[in-house]
Length: 161
Image 1: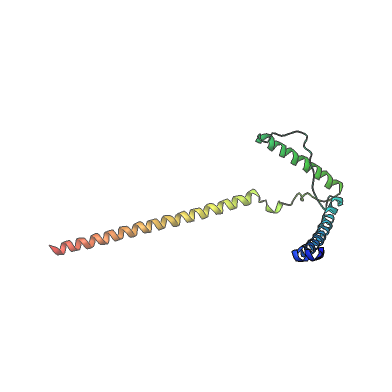
Image 2: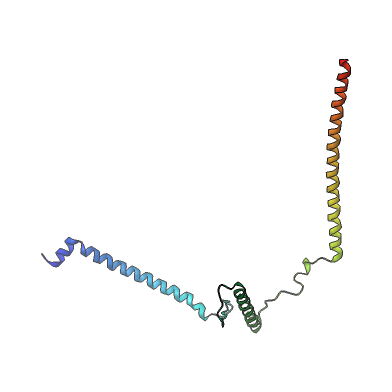
């Protein structure tokens, strides 16, 4: 009985083959992952327009329990980042501001707004008048029913005498 025979009897030969196969498979996966990392990391050399991000350094430590100080830190970081982006876009001569009359179509004149106000007030008056008429009709109907019932009762009371 040789060593190879005992390995075959114990099933060790199968285990070694499986381990070898899984190592080659994991190495292929590793190579694929490294290739993808290389593809993604090429953005590090790209121009700013391809990956627009700004890193703002923080000179001072901020107390995480002081909400006001934290908010002020966020505000200053955002302001610094905006200033940096503004400068970068100006240097690149890229358009980034809206036209001055961009919102002009949305703005209405005072005269136009006054007309709108008058229309709304007229509609409100019409609705109130309709509601008032409906209440009057309801009251008149109730009064009419009461008068008819009382007149019927009066006629019945006369007949009984």
